Image (tube, rainbow, N blue to C red; front, top):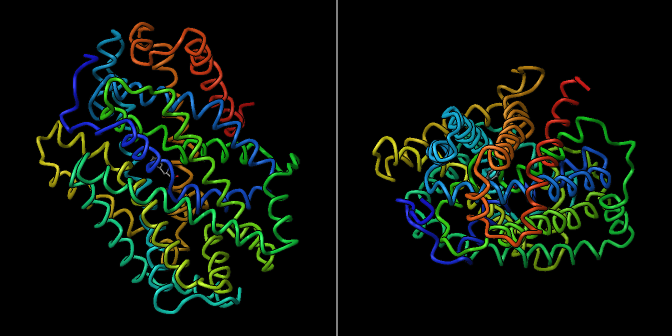
Length: 451
Ligand code: PHE
């Protein structure tokens, strides 16, 4: 089995895989979500918990998930079926694949709406430029959210773009898209950090907010949010990295590439934080402004800086592309399954899965305006989907992946696939068998109030 190839194709090189997986990891999670949840949870202490989760839980599970993908060589659902047969384990493990596929659709339904905000900002940047006045900038954002037509329009545009990349398949679509955008996005973030440094005192205040911890701000919900975000930002627990792993050539080191990917993802998130919080403080904004944070702070910088018009356009274009390279990985598990099990062509599979996600996304778009009063468990549709996926489905998916690869798969299969020197394999083994599942389990118990 180990030498079998995926019917969907293979990455053309190790570098192509790193780019694609980094494309999946780096997205709205880093630039939109990380700053606002850090702001809502008091800053430094939250960042430390998040970083600890990346190292102790995220990286080991990323290694496990891509390893399972490469060994199974199919969509997550079929991969789990194959691997549980290989391990003589219960076939019900393939429901884990189903949970992942569902999480992907649920996440993409709101992800696309937020990516739609970024797309709308590309056009705002082109046709009006941005004001340097914080009040005007906030009003612009509020107007966008209040308009169901605009939100649904941009959500639709983003879904069409996503599905047309997915249709082209592994080499044609996914690889080409990331090769170009990732490096440019990185350069632009560095430029924004440079701008943040010009804000003087506010720069230090922003950096202090991000890095000096006050643990009294941390409660069990904050820990859950930090852990959930570690899964979200690395794209773990729902099969995205598993399906990408299934297109991975045999000779590539999974552990090493996982470290690169997690490292790049973390650097981008921290850069985004360093770019944004100084602006927040310099302009008297609230760090806890919520999902609108970057849309209410960054335009001020573009409004003020020389060349801001051009940089503003570039930034939002790149944000949309970063979102696009994540979006394609969110839907790929379902598309791969439809091709494998239903005999759909890639095109048909993309259209069907895109339509389902789009429909759900419309309800998310409406939850920011006409349906904002409609709440389940005191949450709007957007808040509910975000909580359900990032805080519950991904950690539970990750927990099951850790258990499956650490306890269910035969050790000789795992070690053949990972090909790590003895000591490193042992360290990974301890992390994946005890530390990662133990930590996820404890956090989940804590949140439901059992401990
Ligand atoms: N990692 C992506 C981001 O940070 C989102 C994502 C989640 C992608 C889950 C794939 C799977 O934006």
